[in-house]
Image (cartoon, rainbow, N blue to C red; front, side, top):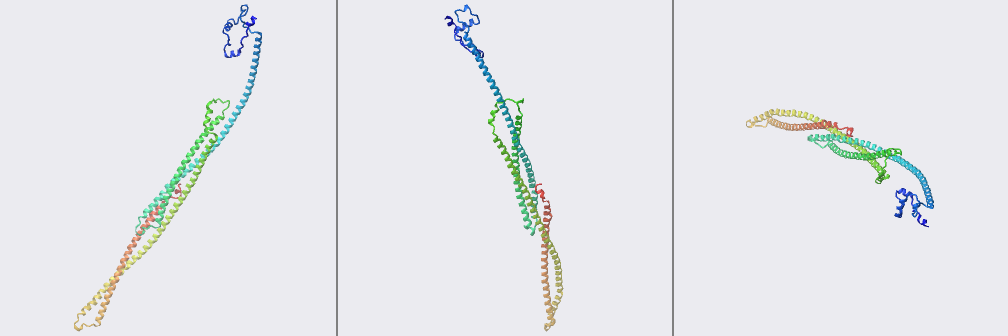
Length: 451
């Protein structure tokens, strides 16, 4: 009865927990703990009589053994389950990892093809824009040369107008030549304005082409770099030695655009480039038409001025020829009139002596005395002779006056003819020798077209 009271069952605890935690088993009564520590490991005997024993009971031994076996079996089963689950999870994760990696590599390959496609489109359009810009630069040079070439026709036309201002007399007239020259000056001014406007448009288009080409080149450069990076990424494998962990790389994906925005960005750039390319081509066609039409207009007006000059020179030559013919006739008539005047003066002089004789006879017959003053036949004859001679002299003098007046008119006509001939000669010198000779330096069609 005493022993049953002394042999109290020991508190149960899990030795594995103690081993894992490194702590001591819990103690409920400090005094018993002290005794236990004092007598632990010592054999019991009679000396321990009356004290509590440190041994297990058989039931406790069997219970403890069963618990250990059950615990070991449960742990073994749990370990086997964990190993099985681990093998299944490993196989599943290995397959999933291989699948996702393969899908990632496939997507990278598709992305490389997509980038290559858009990069090729950008390259093609960049080359077209470069060629178009070069053609536009050629058009700009042609416009600049054509604009410079118009200075020569303008100088020629203004010089012609200035030279023709030196005409004098009746030839200083606003004729067809002057009208055509004024038309030519006005045409050249309008053409210069048109060429300057077209040149400004061409320079602006070249700037736009270069800006768009620069945008495409930046986009191409980005795609080239992206292609290189994706190609490098596609070459990574599980055996690659240059891979590293980058835990924060996935966080940056929230700050990037999606694929549709990426594609739209390139499509917008391509559309803008195509629009500028179309506008540049239209401007080049316009430039070509402007150069062709302005060249044709200038040459047509030049031909019109040349025809007017030729016609005017023919008219003046004909007029000068007629004037010279009339001058020769006038000179001939002046000579004849001078001879006529000489003859009339001689005739008047010849009538002086007969008139003096007749008048002397009449005078002396008036000295006859008395009845001798008779109106006889000699007296009547002398009266008639004196009267007739007086009338003859008066008629000759009147004719001489008319002849002298005619000679004066002839001299005046001669002077006017000579002045007009000199005027025509000067006009022909200006139009034919100066103006038309100067117009031979008129630019050719090739020069006016900007070549």
